[in-house]
Image 1: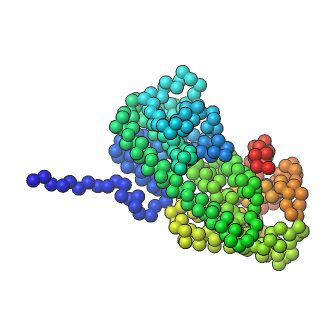
Image 2: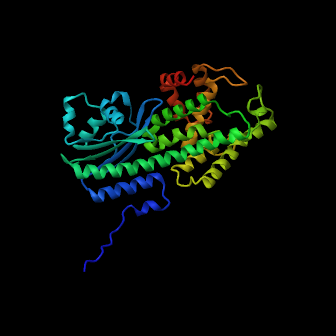
Image 3: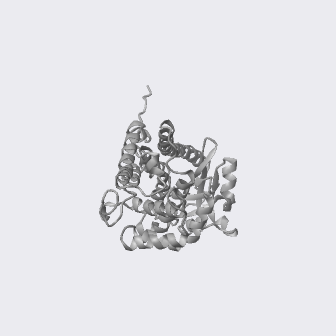
Amino acid sequence: MLEAAELQDPYRALGRPMHFLERLEHLYRVLREQFDGIQRFAMALYDSETDLLSTFIYESDDSSPLLGYSVQLADVPSLQRIASGATLRVVDDMRCFRSQVMSVHTRALLEQGYRSSFTMPLIHENSLKGFLFLNSASLNYFDAPKATYCNLWAHLVGQQLAHEQEAVQRMQALVHFATDVSGRRSVETESHVRRMAAYARLLARELQSEWHLSDAFVEYLTLFAPLHDIGKIAISDSILHKPGPLTADEFETMKKHVSVGRDIVDQAIRHFSLGEMEYADMLRNIVQFHHEKLNGTGYLGCTQQEVPVEARIIAVADILDALLSARSYKEPWTLEKTLSVMSSMADANELDAAVVAVLHKRQEKIEQIRARYP
């Protein structure tokens, strides 16, 4: 009589609470156990607004040769083709690209010894979210059975990505909902939060190598930057949009928005099942500490050691845009005047000097962002 066999389910662990990056690491381990010839897994995220494709996740035996790498999708026709056709791409020998003008991406992988590749666009609800890449040092590695398995595996990874992005979107939707039901105007203009996110990305990318920031850190910082002032929904318009200076009492009220914002984040995570959202502590830190100064004179009086990296970057991005923009109490400043004042703030140890230094090096990029979101 034949007996039933009981097999281990390597994907069962996905049923327990787990952060997004931990899920991806688990999925990659399972794939490697199935096919040990797969030696690299990477993911790049796509921003349709800027047509920018940026490195996000990298898992391999070697360090990433492409940390902080971004490219316009329009400049990579091969990826454009598989994205538009929603098709897979299997390359048996990546040295075939040597007869062409190779991308930085392909050249770096060849130099690390990879030869075969599997590429799949990640598409959710007819929208391109990014690309998934698998590589092997062996030639002709991804035969039909392996490609079929990797295709199914990649769709599972894509679902994890979509779930994570939806968690962030729910948090953003909560802010809009709270603003709408309270009958309040938006606390910040759409263009301000878009510029804020772009400035944050610029600053973090420039500091990425020096500060040892991961690609995932940069992406989540960019996603969370627009939420820095969510606590302002609790501040009255008479204070938010006052045309003149605030009184001492009004300023004390204004300062409360960082604590209120932290409470909103905590409640949203608890009530909207966002506990597994990656980098939730980063969001909390951005909201709570973005008005702190390194010399201890900020809203909460935190010391330099207490101000996290993400808050230092957001503080500079926020002040930069505030000074360059027209507000109810001021006209827009020139970039020259803005950088001069911010340098003085860095000299006084109010802002992180390394972050402010990036602004001086990337003035052209700042102007490009201002032009993109006027």
